Amino acid sequence: MESHLKVSHPKLMAAVLMFGSFIGLFAETALNMALTDIMEDYSIIASTGQWLTTGYLLVLAILVPLSSYLVRWFTTRQLVTAALIISTAGALFAVAASSFSMLLIGRLVQAIGAGIFLPLMFNVVLMIFPIHKRGAVMGIVGLVITAGPALGPTLSGLIISVSSWKYIFVIMMVLNIILLIVGAPKMDNVSNITKPRIDILSLVLSTVAFGGIVYALATLAELPLSDISIWLPLAAGIIALILFTLRQFKMTEPMVNLRVFKYPMYTVGTILMIATLFIILTVAILLPLYLKSVLAYTAIAAGLLMLPSNLLNIILSPIVGSSFDKVGARVYTRIGFTLITIAAIVLIVIISSTTPVWQVVAVLCILFAGVAMTIMPAQTNALNQLPPELYADGSAAMNTLTQVAGAAGTAVAITMFTAGQNKYIEEFGAEVPVEFLAGGINYAFYSVLVTGIIGLILSFFVKNSLPKTK
Image (cartoon, rainbow, N blue to C red):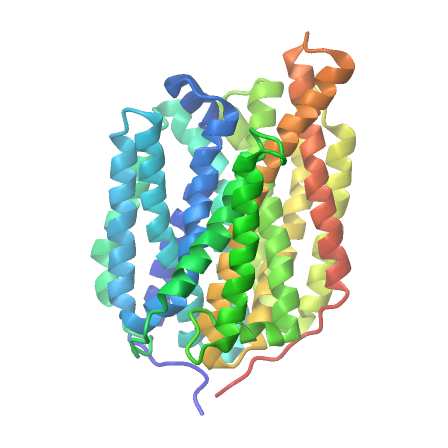
């Protein structure tokens, strides 16, 4: 029995989906380097500005669960075309933004397009390539997932240095239009169009669950946990998540088939993916703040300083992917999370207002070498354990949780950063701004350390799983 679907242009389809997903993931962190400029242009504070990233991830977290419905209602070409048009419209709105509110709306519209694209990439790639090529292909998928948000600050730093931050959106808009013209017409359908009944209650519960939790985490940067603006959406989100989960198990055609979590390696792999995405998004918002606000580097210099670690990730990801079948997820995830944990410890030790920048760059390289070894093996090993009919549900559940993790990473980073600054000011005063800013960044890296340790412990429960065929 064939282990994959025959399509006319498998490599082109994969390339369009990967590049479209890369643009969407790049957009997650692209404004981090521009945050100080945007704060100045619109007279806002950091905790307000971070909504440009958190809001984007919030929409992804709400929308991605719908993907398992969308692939059963619309053809692959229809979904790709719609995603590219919506992303382009969002970028256009952001370019024209005369206020922070308009810019935020543009970002949220952009996120709708990315929310369609990302799970579609997983589902299609798993369906159109034979099992013996899956390791190498998923290695490139892993690279897209890590390089998109990781390269965001670097590429946007280069753009900001030669023009306005609005050109970040212009470039994304142009790339989406090119994909729409060149790639969308070549998309063959790989979906099984059954048009299942849409369960409105599941949609509402999913939206309240993921929206409430991410909103509460993001608002922690501005208000204490005891404030009603935090505990009410958090409580509503947790209750809705429990009700959503119970409902999915009772339904004959669930919105997201949570029975995927009955496969142990899928569950472990998804948690490791959550940990890795949390770390990537946390680092992607903290490092630009540190390099620009504390060490006083320009946007282009800060972007270039983050480039070596990204290049190392780009080099290592295909190597990990091509050797995955021989080495296995067990070895790679253990080595990866060991490197991440070591890097987090060293960053906490060295980060200050006077740290030589070469030390930060070197440790960042260690951290991203670890990321390259965790994300693709964890993800592929997780999906390998699922039967093909559960790929759409598996990728929807995994992508939802990783986007929530990304949003949580951004929110927790800013919250820890603010708490760290206040802690430093209480002890030493606020006479030297770079000192308490450095104190805030240092404190925020404890969240990376804790997440790295959790990932390292879980990696010892990983068992290599073989792909299932129909």
